[in-house]
Length: 201
Image (cartoon, rainbow, N blue to C red):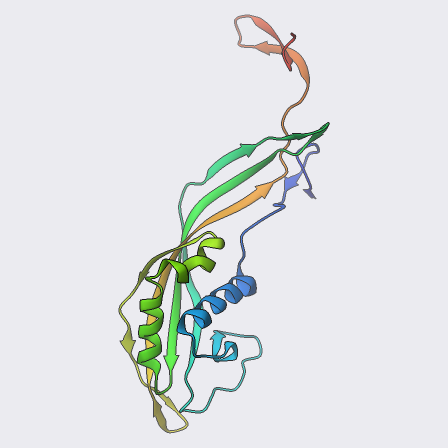
């Protein structure tokens, strides 16, 4: 049974965690729309939607994107943050690890190559990466694009595929409280040592 904090036994669930799924897609969409600058948000679409919208006409410029792989670091860092607000203990523990995100981008339409180039160049500007930074995401690389025309309704449509590689710090926060008061004996198998938390003045 899950519990809210470490004052009772049971599994701990996070009280704060990084965005995944739709919230992450929303943030990536805002970045792509903003940097390209000439596509409406509905023309920058997450892949694999439960109810996919109709494909735009062959002459329409649009982008499909989606996180196709996430590589988390093997080891995580566990840090404890302690703060007293009056008599309240608001200490928490965070579990942090970096992860690499691979986002597959597919550009369609007559300006497919131009929109790919716009996004690639725009990501080199620090100001354009501000939204990503606010989300704790850093830019690693924009891998070489590949021209792969798509056959739609017996018409070849220009298509360019590219992979955007990002790094983000993934933080899960748990309500693990600090030990405020304890009295007992420490047994090291040779002798007993009395302990008291906090120490006597």
